[in-house]
Amino acid sequence: MKETIKSWVLTILVVGSLLLTWQNWSFQPEYESVNSSETVQETTEIAETREPAEIVRPNQGVVRSDGRSALMTEDQASSDLDKAFRQLEEASITETTATDLEHDELYQNAASAAYSMEFVFPSSVSWSMINELFSFEDENDEAASILDGSVDRIILTASPGSEELNAAFVSYDQGVIVNSNTSLDKSDIEYERYLSEHESMLTYSADEDGYEKHIYIPEDPGSRTNYTYASTSLSANSFQQVLLPEGNGQNLQTYNYDSSEVITDGTRELRINDTGDYLRYANPTYSEQTDGNDTSSLVSSFEFVNNHAGWSDDYQYYDSNTVDGETTITFRMNKGGLPVFRDSNGSDFASIQVSNVGTQTSGYSRPLFDLENNPVRTGDAGVSTDLPTGEETLDAVQEQCSSSLIEDIQIGYSISRNGENSGYYDMEPGWFVRCDGSWSPVDFSGDDNEEGGA
Image (cartoon, rainbow, N blue to C red; front, side):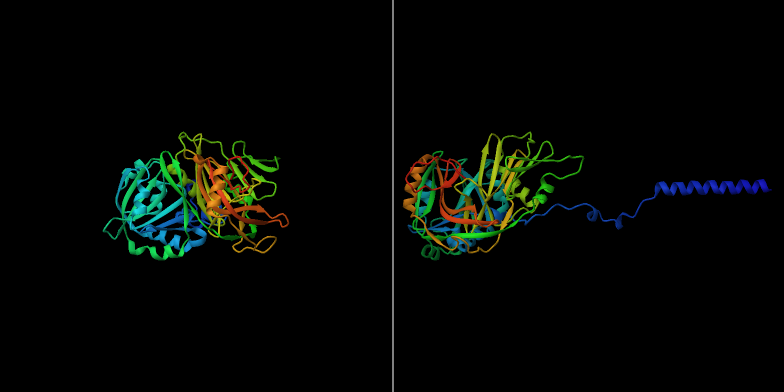
């Protein structure tokens, strides 16, 4: 009897041991009580995110009516230019059809129309970004397939006897116009007020692949004010976390070279200059697609900066340039409605540049500071600078740059470090010309200059 009891007790102990072992192996923790977001670092957000419409804007508007015309620029008419463009952004756009761009016919039609409004972009805008900005009500596959490149400007006109405004999306690269109907009519645009309140202009006709590309220049720009701004530093470590994150077995090396701190994982490289206010990133990882796809580069470059909330200050899309299959998108700093360019010494603290090869981000350069909203008075700050007239500027530009290479002429600011105050930057107004793909200050000395610049 005792042996039987012992056998049962032993059996129960063995079964109990097996049950405990099984529970131990099969135990599942209550994952609901462990929030992964609390243990995994979220994507670094450095400054701000932006909407595409905040970054991609026209920098000029030309309003015409019955042979009269006026130029609307950002600094002199930011509210009016912005208002008119937002009206088009909010309108319905239908019946898009693509036609060939005839030599100067577009401008003859715009000039002779009872009413027209022309929006000029600083640089051509990809059709994929155009679709982000506007509400196309019908399929525009034809336009998208033809406009594999981009749109340089948009012209609104009213057909004879009609109140409705039509929109022409102009592409010089393809020699194509995409014509559309809009839900706007001419009463929506305050033509008479714009003509009476905004400045007269000169028109310079630049030849682009056989088409007349018109450059508009304020005839009498008057004066602009010099400014000095204090700055707040952006964390270089935050950018390193985005561009060269540690982990996954990566061993980062840091060394000094050519007045910069260099951080590398053996392939990618991050350089921070010795003053700590400028960053350059290089990623020599190439995509199988190496044709420099302008159509996607603007959108992907915008999203690249947005993904780490990298927008400090006011930046606007300003340039797109493709060399050897690599497309570089430039977002330029804007102060008081004017673009900010590098100074004559070649230091560029005023642009965010993103380079792409196919679908890969191959480069990124930018300032590591955020300017305060309001200027301070130090040095020459607050002093007004009288700018040369449009005619004087055009004469100087034609001496400085071959007529066939003139691409744009703008009023802007040059930026430089304030020599007496660390963390302060001076803004000096002046005329700038884009000659053969590069921006530089207009030289009024009359001496020949080398072409090139910012």
